Length: 91
Image (cartoon, rainbow, N blue to C red):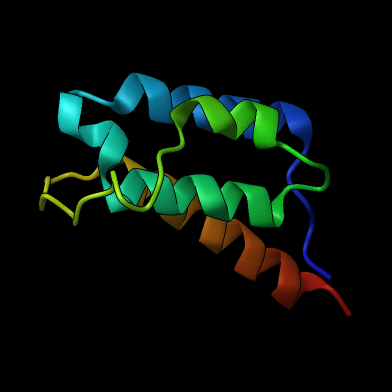
């Protein structure tokens, strides 16, 4: 099984997401919201208190704005690559 994110790592990732929001529309973007869900999925414990302040309802969410680079996408890539590497390195 892949290594789970620690509470501290989840906090760091969410802080990075928060500081990466350069436009008001960022908080409602499906990219950022998707990364918050990914963090919740791979965390070893309940991190909803960490991710909750940045989460919005599905009704408030909008499609990707096509930002280049997309900071949430880069963070998601880091999470996904680390999880894939952990899965591949386990016997």
